[in-house]
Amino acid sequence: MPTSEPDRVPGRRAACFAVVDPATGETFDEALDQQPDELDAVVDRAHRAWHGWRADPAARTTALRVAADAVETAGDDLARLLTREQGKPLAESYAEIARTAARLRYFADLAPRTRRIADGRPVHSEIRWRPLGPVAAIVPWNFPLQLAAAKLAPALAAGNTMVLKPSPFTPLATRLLGSVLVTALPEDVLTVVTGREPLGARLASHPGIRHVTFTGSVPTGRAVAEAAAASLARVTLELGGNDAAILLDDVEVDRIADRLFWAAFRNCGQVCMAVKRVYAPAQLHAEVVEALAQRAKTVAVGAGLDPNTRLGPVNNAPQLARVEQVVKQAQAGGARAAAGGHRLDGPGYFFAPTILTDVPPRSPVVTEEQFGPVLPVLPYRSLDEAVDAANGTGFGLGGSVWGTDLDRAEAVADRLECGTAWINNHAELSLAQPFAGVKNSGVGVAGGPWGLYGNLRPFVVHRPQEA
Ligand code: NAD
Image (cartoon, rainbow, N blue to C red; front, side, top):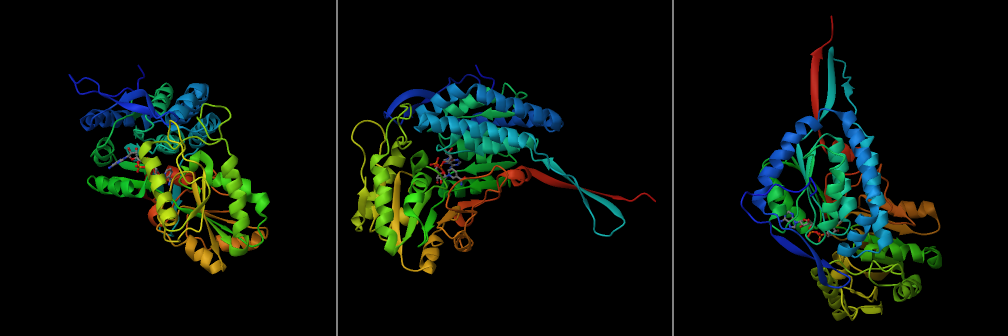
């Protein structure tokens, strides 16, 4: 029994819920269905563990490095389980596990800096940084392990403890990750809880939680912020995206088509900062559609455990239904599928990789987040029109500009209202960069030293200078 196993309410039998393999649509295992009233004991223990954990930064560094090694050692088991419940190709699961370990190592070596305030007064004033207490992390199903690590590594490195709740669509790999990590950590520094709503809502509003760090959709992010307002806990929200890629008229379509295709279709399009809309100059539009459609028609779609697969299923039935709905809405408005446009026959949650053209610009597949293997390609006539359209949704996570003249491309990228912009690339992130969305895409800053400070509070000491 892993030591991350939860506290239970005495006398209650453990209930479970089904976990489905999206490649078959069948239940393949079950997970503990923890109830909200179990959280009091979990948070209480996280609070007690905090006092020892916050006291010894050197021990934290060592523990997080050991934890990173342990994740790599368990890589085979983690990768298979992740693919089984999430659907992604096994190679992508291994890549996610490598990123999980990399996050642990990066934050293991990061420490806040005590700073002197030099304002001319005859006082020695110093800013020190203190952890917040138990942190609640709530994560989605698209990158369960990597996103869990992106939250727990900075929170734990800063001296906080954590209660981590994965999505009910992907509870098992996270629970296994938890049982691997706790072998390197003092008891109750990290606890994984699994269950269905209202477990997350209760965790976000728990009075013992001092910071709620959430990744997920915009509507749930709003609900989490409201729940956390009850205890005035700090809130960090990493929410949805609807990233645009603007192709310039000097782009070499053949050279960029592979990169552009995978920027949209990696993880079956279920990436917060996937390319979700392409804007192509009107004179290149047909060539771009053709290049992307040719790739969509020939990419190997299948179960993630099959070594030939490059594109897996959509993770869950409600998401598959949503993808189908936005495609049907677009088609009803006159859009044409240059590739795909429909579910695939047979078992599992497969949707044919889809390239849409002639899409009405106000169609939900353009204005909202499709979060699946579907990409609309829209023509533009002037750059201003393209930039206005790129900036014209409620989202602002990322964006990219593709062309040969890099200075010109960068000048266009500079006009994008988003947190990260790329030239001739998309969604490549550095561990050392701030990660933040604007508008509905997020609140607060994660990543790099900003992610560490997001889990700390300033503590200022003033003392008179020695006479
Ligand atoms: P979701 O919002 O439905 O769920 C996210 C998490 O919140 C899950 O663990 C879920 O169980 C939990 N939850 C549901 N209702 C809750 C409530 N009332 N209170 C507290 N927790 C609750 O999102 P999803 O469908 O799992 O994930 C897809 C979304 O995540 C997309 O919008 C995607 O863009 C976004 N996402 C954003 C980033 C980013 O870094 N900005 C990264 C990955 C995914």
